[in-house]
Image 1 (spheres, rainbow, N blue to C red):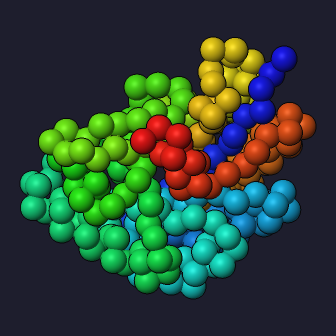
Image 2 (image 1 turned 180 degrees about the vertical axis):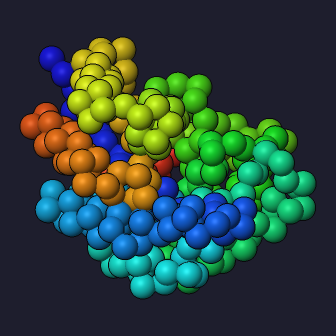
Amino acid sequence: MSKKCTVCLSFDFDAESVQVRQREEPGRVSKGQFAIRRGIPRIFSLLDRFEIKATFFVCGWVAQEYPQITKMIVSKGHEIAAHGYLHENFDTLSISDEREIIEKTTQSLKEFSEKIKGFRAPYFKLSINTLKLLAEADYIYDSSLMADDRPYLLEVPGTTSKIIEFPVEWFLDDWVIFEDKQHTPSDALDIWKTQFDSLSEMGEIPQNQLVFTLTLHPACIGHAYRINVLEQLISHMKDNKVKFSRMGDVAESLLKEWV
């Protein structure tokens, strides 16, 4: 018999931060801005309709550039978490620069939410210092690594701190599925449904670790045929009576059990 799975829908709210940092031409900038004009409104509508609370990993610059949308994320009961300031490559930064960016990002997001609990590295790339710096800044979870298919506990090197890791995967990332690989809608839905169903049926996974995490981008999943794929996936999950949860809530619950 399948266990009841917890689903964490997560959205990397980058907008045009990457293009601005790289000083790209207007056409590329406009691709990121699709998140503002169409992606976010469609995501809000879908989540409202299904009464789902999700986690939005927001770049600090995006929060400052689009404060009304960031306020709406919080007012709708969703979680905001950190995603760098201007979608930096954390694995290329010095420790001093990385610390400065984490502090700047945290302060930017705290203008909208009192507690910022989680972090996802842009491009899923951490440096050797990132986890230690996150622990210093009182983050309780990360979502950038790929060592498991369920949440696990990270012991931060050189500290007594522990952080919950929500693992990611390229095939559970809409940007890779749709933009890089150009999969068809039916391919994407089949990949995500099959992974979800397979995890739900695995007897080896303890109930508290049966968590399905999906990485989505408003500038990607917000396109008409792609948001339809997400709607079909959510309907399938609802039929299986899953629990949808914000990642910070799951992390707090696991820390109470494991630490």
